[in-house]
Amino acid sequence: MYKRLIIGFVLLVFGLSAVSVPPILADQKPNDYKAAQQSYLKTAEKYRNQARDLQDKVKSVPSGAQKYVRQLAGVFNQLADTKVALAKAIGAKDWKYEEKLEKKYYQLKAQEEKLWNAIERAKK
Picture 1 (cartoon, rainbow, N blue to C red):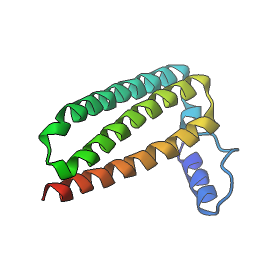
Picture 2: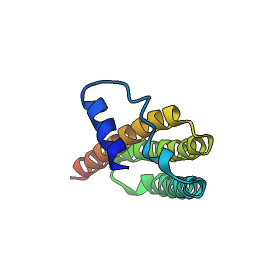
Picture 3: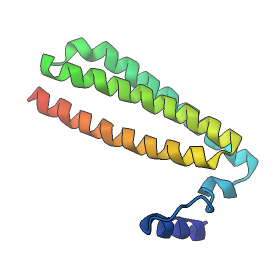
């Protein structure tokens, strides 16, 4: 398992394609795939709930922060969509697509953090 991580990291650092190195999940058993799918779907539901909560709270935040809260709710919906797509990719064992979705997920998480910071600044 660690061997694949190290190889993937080396390939990533040197800009080489990691297509020949399957993701860590490739070593897992079918039951592990199901568990990973269920985990992704549960996380997606949590993101959907967070998006709904934020949409409900838009009016209660200061007017300067409202646009950021709306954007954040959109990001949470995108995160949920990404987690659902990841669950499907794992079920189909489409590792290339899973890799793309993982990158998208981390980009969305970075965007989420920026929006939380913007909301905090707007509240002051």
